Length: 281
Ligand SMILES: [Mn+2]
Image (cartoon, rainbow, N blue to C red):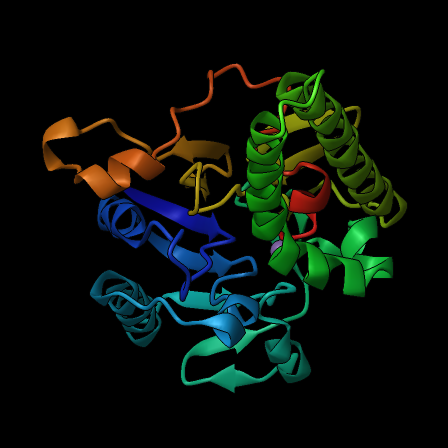
């Protein structure tokens, strides 16, 4: 299928979670005039701790470079996990232009602010140390919790620690985290007199109208495998590339797989951004 523009974010190349094969399938299906890489494409944070780089991830990079070489407009808008690139605002690398943010005009004349969005996330903006600790410490915390409850059983401690209660509290926090993020972006876009925003960062794909502005989030290629496309008439569409092609899926990808979200997604699914976990985005 040929579209005017493709927007993808939060690919997290260099990590185990990156679903590079699915992204390759998606790129095979969609050709475009413009390709916007809306941040956290290469995960330099995670690569400081250990690199997980697969042949498929290599192919992703090659396919993107190839598109740029063949005359497609490819723009990289750095996120917080590839923030080193932010120093190169306005610089072209080969055929890829780096911009901190960009105003994209759709075919029907609507003006969208394109940016990663982490500067609107209160956790990563004001508590960078917390974000970094959260990133490293979250897995540790989960493991610690498991050991603690094993220890409790071993010591025959009365009472129990409620996983359900813990999870519920976290989901509630996650919902308000997502709403706060969306609210501040919508506010900023309205102040600037634009028609909408296209962002990433919170790993929660969305495409909806809120009053007079349109809020669009590309989602991610770690869990949800989502992208935004602009058709030739300017219409935006949210693509969920997750397909349960069981025969072609290895056991490892099945274990990592997350079922597709219900389609009339009025509410973002708080499946990723939870408390300390939100700090990892
Ligand atoms: Mn991010």
